Image (cartoon, rainbow, N blue to C red; front, side, top):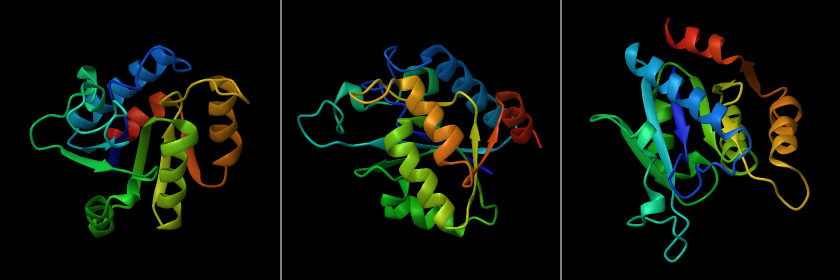
Length: 173
């Protein structure tokens, strides 16, 4: 199994997100459990381009301090929603014998959704721990409604939705 941490960057991992405290607590606990048990943690950063505040060299581009990658952990940069848009990451994941991906991070309705669907289409078993993806309110739905819609409806046939405790236990095996 690989724990894929998506877009937990300073510009967007902010307390305006739906259930921010639960997102942070759960994600930190999962990363800690993975590290403790020798499960690979891979970080992905979104580069939205120069002038956006979310581009290489910008403070907002950096992964949040609470989850800062440790030496030896892989970090990939993407420029489209799906993590599979990064050719090196796609190649690396394809080479892995274990086809289980636990996906956490931001934003539910953009990069997490695109990555979940891309992973499923490529034959990965996708695991989504409860409370470890989030988004902002938008013109059509609250962050809460958006998160619930994707986690409980859109991905219903695509993912193994588990509680945080179940996810931590999975990382311990």
